[in-house]
Amino acid sequence: PIKALLFDLDGVIVDTAIYHYQAWRRMANTLGFDISEEFNEQLKGISRTESLEIILAHGGKTVSEEQKLELATRKNEWYLELVSQMTPANILPGVPAFFEAVKAAQLKTALGSVSKNARLILERIGMLDDFDAIIDGTKITRGKPDPEVFLKGAAELGAQPDECVVFEDAVAGIEAAKRGDMLAIGIGDPTVLTQADLVVPSLAQLTLERVLTLSAV
Ligand code: B16
Ligand code: MG
Image (cartoon, rainbow, N blue to C red; front, side, top):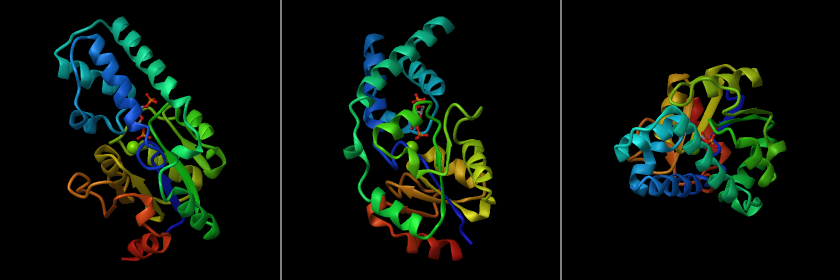
């Protein structure tokens, strides 16, 4: 039976992907190139340093390690400026009702995010106390698609992988869940999240009941 639900942050609980995109775009522009929204798709769920490498390669730029650190720091400052304006109004549709149902069913919850800013974001939206465990970028050594973030979440909740369901909006995150032998529910487009066991547009289109039925199959 399902004991634990593991939630990605960016794209599942809040839409910070748009802020990441804006901040990376600003950085790319200072280097003389641009990045499209379509290109941004592959950065979802990917760590800050890996994202920077992908963007630099895309723009055909070679920079020193020192400059990389500077660029990543500046991007994060721009990103944090946007995050600082967040409020509970930024919580994605369907999330509060879904969490109420989860609590009523006495299931455990964990956050599984590669972001180093995850706690700050949860604080801004008033959801810090809604998770029994928080696994973020400060607690992991390998980003998604490595399953580390979700395996650690399961371990902290005392659940086996087959007792866990992962909610993810990123291709890399769905892959991480599947590599961890967990059920994966995609939030987004089924033609993009092809590895997911079920895909819904948002948590507003999903009931806990449906999740628990799915796991029984
Ligand atoms: P930070 P998630 C990920 O969050 C984002 O999807 C990804 O775009 C970002 O680069 C990464 O966090 C690192 O974030 O720069 O704040 O440490 O989807 O795993 O919740
Ligand atoms: Mg995400």
